[in-house]
Length: 114
Length: 114
DNA sequence: GTGATTGTCAAGTGTAAACTTCAGTATTTT
DNA sequence: AAAATACTGAAGTTTACACTTGACAATCAC
Image (cartoon, rainbow over all chains, first blue to last red; front, top):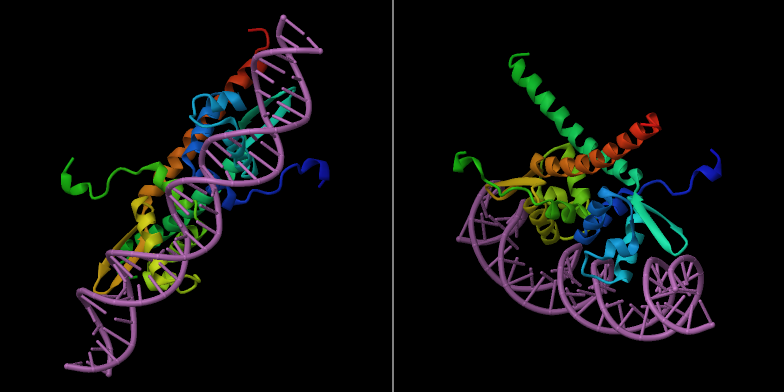
């Protein structure tokens, strides 16, 4: 594993959920779904200061949900698949467990006298 | 649509994310993955009071992630698919948008002179 | 250069919410 | 009936965090 290939630490699902727990941050994410945005571009429709947006972006980046890079004086933000993959995995895990339970239930119902 | 078939209001994704934003509540959910539990059964491994667990359960139920019913003096809690379906849908929506973007990118790269 | 745009940092405020305590209500056990 | 079990409700505390202000840094436009 080349160290140069590990820019961000492995996703902490804790951070992901905390990040998504805030409505403003989800609003930011849904804006980023359309296309990458600058910080002020993201701030415009939200009724909060630029500073607040920057703080939200920090949380989203630490969660691996957003990636950004600064070119000149403008920071361009885009969605980062990493966090979403982790989230998807968590949901999948939850679902798989109880589908297994349903399968067992189905087996029992299917063979009532086994 | 029979009114008797609509026991809980439609899922509010806002509540779902808020509910999952707390580590203790996710711990509760992961315990419920194994099998249904009583309130005190859930409280045992957590280092908080029974009251706190009850409060967390209220949040989880309002989010449609947990369903419970009281029989005698014991309340039995189990996972509720409704909230998880809504969550899954949200993740899917997010992912689909940017995969469409990747498709467009792929199309452009595939036909550089179209 | 001057001035406008774009963002960052440090420090403070205010509120939501996670948790506690304590008192109370049903149920089950003996 | 008395005691234990399993919760529930009201009210207070304390911490976390969303947001602001104000000062500053860097880049672009003129």
